[in-house]
Length: 299
Ligand code: SF4
Ligand code: SF4
Image 1 (cartoon, rainbow, N blue to C red):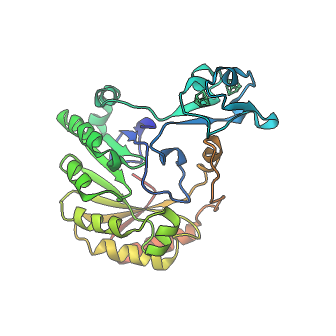
Image 2 (cartoon, protein in one colour):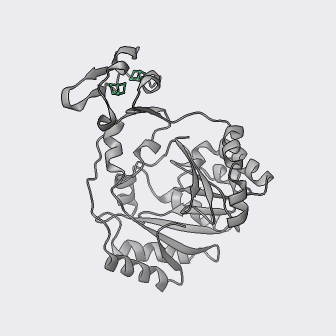
Image 3 (cartoon, rainbow, N blue to C red):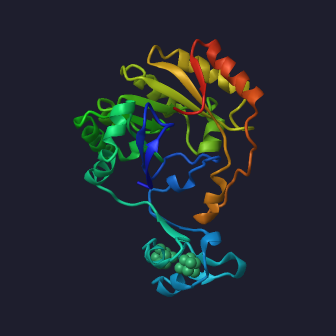
């Protein structure tokens, strides 16, 4: 996992703990959590936090850290094996390890700390990512542990997983958040790296299971915000029956862009600007036109 967030309010009913799984089969060009994409642990470096003490360069067994003038103590990613020693010694947290191995019991110890808040607000635990279903055995065990103490459970998925992985978790999940990004397959491949066929197929199958599904559409200006794409999303979702009744439109934000540099990557998509309200209304009307509830933002 790369994060466990307590007191989350946007990822399901009530107050929730969100467990962010590391690793995703999609590589969306606009991704605001690039640290979620790789399944491996990674080292992040924040030049702004660095106090130039040089300790990381001395301790690195791979000699992967060099002083680079105004860029501070940069990491040669080809030499680094993410051992984490630089992060351990760094006094200012300028170097940090992203991703850790956890057991179900460790996560549950954290989850149980907020039991009183879940009970009072109807909250619980949401598995997010990255993509929880690429670690479906762990996801299943975690969901079972949550259900065994009466907690509500939700999964946020990009939908790109084998149906067998969905089958492992579906009986233990109270709510699915299901991403639909682009209905045109060619553009989907170009912008996410994979075809949308499996995503659409799984959504269709999942809609017959009986668990409520909220479809989530990130609204990315210039990429998937065409009215045609929204008509196709509305029409497909409406055809799936009573378990899919709500679509959440998530306006793009550029907060993830600085994260790319921290993990030694280049963001392909620069700032796209915020979605305009007028445009959001148009998109909502299209969705509502198909008899679906349209909501801006998560919850
Ligand atoms: S994680 Fe280990 S190998 Fe990588 S830069 Fe830090 S100390 Fe060096
Ligand atoms: S140990 Fe931390 S603060 Fe010191 S040079 Fe390295 S990154 Fe900067």
